[in-house]
Length: 172
Image 1 (cartoon, rainbow, N blue to C red):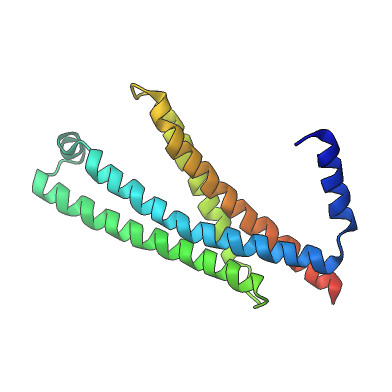
Image 2 (image 1 turned 120 degrees about the vertical axis):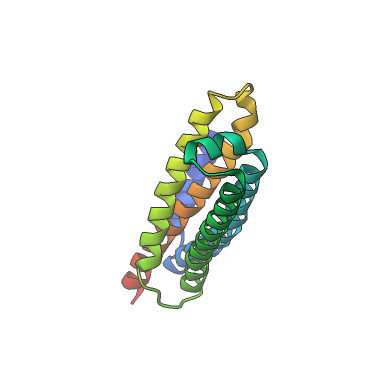
């Protein structure tokens, strides 16, 4: 964005009416909430990729289980983790969308969103560290970009919700 256009955008923000700012925050919260739900699909994809590419012999020797027990334990554990992760993301996303549409929501979903963002950040670090062990670090660009976007959606949910709450309080 050229410097002159950026300045015009800042001026536009300052001259917006409070109602327009609230509407923009509501729209942002709705979109970010939908994105958080959508990134639950990414969690399922990560688990699917892990199951596809995991070296069962190495895992079996690390955990001290035979291959059949390892397979059952791995699938059951990952299904439970996937269900919890998707459920939590749906809770955060639908709560954000509900708040954007004017329903009062507790701050619990914001705390949960912050915890998920922290966990995604550690996952992003693990992906970045793992890319140093792969033959082609370029193959890690997509997972890193998706994980960073998931974090950005969670941060947008938290930011937009807090700003919307503050703006609604000042309006009455």
